[in-house]
Structure formats: C-alpha cells, structure tokens
Length: 269
Image 1 (cartoon, one colour):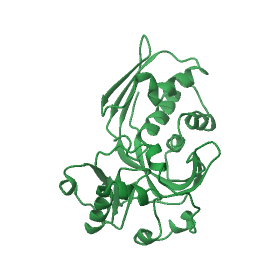
Image 2: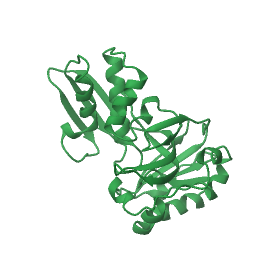
Image 3: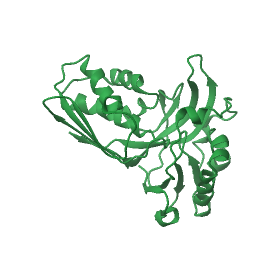
C-alpha cells in the first residue's frame, strides 16, 4: 500500500500555560497542506524500515512509523512488513511531517490488513506517539488545544487560496522553541478571529514562537517580511518553526525569490 502523508500549517499558535507534566497547553488551528512524504507498506519475511530522502536522526527502530507498527502489532495479529519512507517534508520545520508519517502508518495498516480499528482507538494510538499525530487521523482543518492532541471541528475553508511555504533549512527542536516562550492566555478567541477575512488576520493572529525565534534567527523574520512584500494576505511561521508560509489570493511562482531555501507552493483545499 502506498500513501502520501501530508504536512500541516498552524493558523495562529497561542501558548496558554505550562502543564504539570512538563508539556504546554496550546491553542491553534491545524490546516492540512499538500507537501507530502511517500510511505509504502508491503508484506515481508521480517519487519524492516527503510528510509530514503531527507535523513532522520536515530535508527530505524526509533522512527515513529516503526513505533506505530510495533504498537499495533502488540494488540493485533499483524504479519511482518517492510515500511519504506521517502522523506520530503523537512524535519524540525513546524510542519508535523513525522507525526503525519506515524498517523498514516496507523491508517494504512488498518486498511491494508482490515483490522477495523475504530476512529477513537486510532486517535488513542496516535496520541501515544506524539502531540500532533492525532490531527492527521482525520486530517481536516481543526481547532486544536490541550497539548495539540485534542480537537474540535472548525468551519474554515481556504480552498482556492495559494500557499508558498519557505523552509531555510534550520532545524529547530521543540525543546529549543519552548525554552524562550512566556505562556499567556490570549485575549482573542482564535476561532472567532478565523471567521474574519484572511486579510484581517495579519494584525490579529500570531504565533507565540515568533517573538523569541525571530530574535535568534533573523532570517525567519526576513522571509516573513518578504512574503508580505510579494503580496501575501497573511504570513506566519508554522508551529515551532522554521518554515514560514504566505497565503496569496492568486497563484504565484516564488521559488526563485528564495533560491537558497526549500520551497513548496500550491493551492489549498
């Protein structure tokens, strides 16, 4: 079975408070985008994980796809498989690529071997693997809260809008990103603001990580400013960085404007 785990962007990211377990409660809207990896699962004489494309630190047994397989195999009769991941979504980029790979592994194993795992149980598995993983089970726009692993439906469509995503190749770990933030509950209800026109978001929707990470990595702020100069109606850093995206009313080819960066661009759905 061949599937294509997709990235997500954050439309707003408020860091509400630090939890007793060391994590943080957040508020954000996760929105799926078309930048994808490729993930193939085939029957094999023994379990194997094979990686091509962007290198991922650690060994194959540490990969979230491998962990997803082992977790489900502990509860269901699964034959050994070979998981082949072609990694194209940058890591440490605020795009949830690793979380998507894990969630799509869960869904692909369920479908391929007709396990009939309920949606609720798939969510349970995904939450055990990482805070962002649960979003990719349903993989539709959602208002996410708690650690980012609790969701509620949100009536939001950016279909037909053009997005340009610029990744300068900086790997920003979650620990690094959270080390500089001050948790504070926002005065604005993100769900309410997202109902307003995209052009109004610039002054109302923010990513709390930008304040400290832009000081540490000025290139990120430069990219955001450049996207606005090129006509973006809204631009922001995604997640804990380092990808900066711009949303445009019309199609624009901006790859040459950021020739030292990885750029993905396309229509939103």
